[in-house]
Image 1: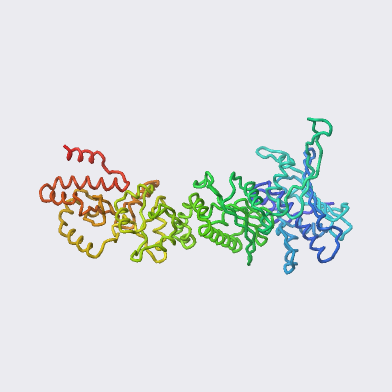
Image 2 (image 1 turned 30 degrees about the horizontal axis):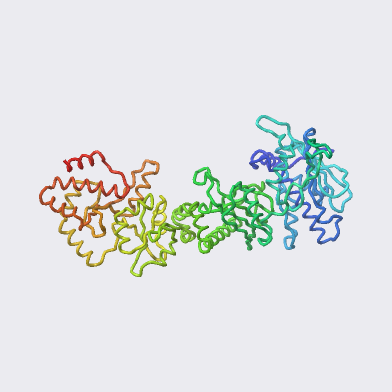
Length: 628
């Protein structure tokens, strides 16, 4: 029989698909197995409407075999099969899908769950095959037909023999070429691995004869090779079960096997979302961060399935960056897939699933915070910094999602506290949320301003991560309460009377401060007395939006050609400390020494604040001069 030609556009699409659309050649098996499952689905559905079809539901199956000598792979199903016209229409015209038509025809009827919606998936087999034979006998027909093709040059359809309905696909695998090992797909163990990876949850058993070594009866130490039929797929995904049907051991076993973690997960989230886009999700929050979690090499994402068929191993679009620590799977039969079933259309369906996941993860974390505090703090030590980055990123777009999930160490008991908890125990006269930033809790405690604020009885949040202050700046307020850095020049902890006395004294010694400012140049914006220090003689405070702590963080970042960002600072001197009286005396008697004192006090303030000294050689000379 003469070959029939693909249409011109079909030839172009076939060539493009084989060479471009599919990223991994191995997915050909997923496509063919999904098609086989579709065919069985159709016959099963027919049994619901027509009655007995000659097969029970338990009899439906897909058979696989591979022969290295003949270089063939065979996929056989006992599904509904295809007539001659269906072979022509479904396989002769690329992108024509019998599954899609079937689903549309039955869209108002229940129990229809067809995986394959694009006939083009079948042609992925040409990535590994130089010829394909499809022998099919339609349900209710006595005659079988064979569709055969070697690719773009066309195809033939001839009469064939087959004892029962169903389809047998035979692939002749290409010879190995440079950089291409096609023979791997003839290895039964490789095939079994691909079934487990992509098609483990197809609802019908996928069977293959496998060789197995067993002890020889009566002959100790001797083994013989036998062939037994094995079912390669588990068929029922754990996430499709009801949570009440699953044990912790099952969840943990699945988690360790799928995600290669040596520990059990900290939290298991098993849920079903209903709506315009329905989905089943099984999510896990790990106990610890992967070794590469905070590096650019880390890839976030959930395994994405469509009706039990793996579509994407890491679908990044299902998780926001701030929840990138979540592992797990999402499965939806409602997804719109493109022709390769490998790349998703970025549509409302995917966004709907992602939004449901985000909301669910947030709610479960809040429950953990409220009801399992120790467990939440363990989680926060591993992933809290990621939540803070989420608070800061995208100009604070996600702050309402994350603000109740972040914790800070508190001065009250040196334990974690949430913003909600902090606000709930604020003093009646307290107007703002106080915080201080530094490398460690101990170093923050040494700051002069911290001592003063604590002495007033106010609680302070200790910010020890680089991102912390940036995150709070982006958050702006919490429960209508502003955030105030205790090292900020606008710190307001004085009484009205104290403020008035300080204002008068600063005005009185205005010329002295100008003299000290001249000695320090652009290092500070202003020098002044303060009443906010308890026992310390001096401190530096920030005057603008950029704090000294933020300046230190920004200094660590790679240079990009822009001018470095500097904090606007004020040098504050404790007006009740003996050093203040010494300065007053020097202003009247020795202004050169006053300038030297100004430089030493500035260097001291920088050291107290955890910063480096601009000119340590000059400082050493000044100190030695005063001593001698």
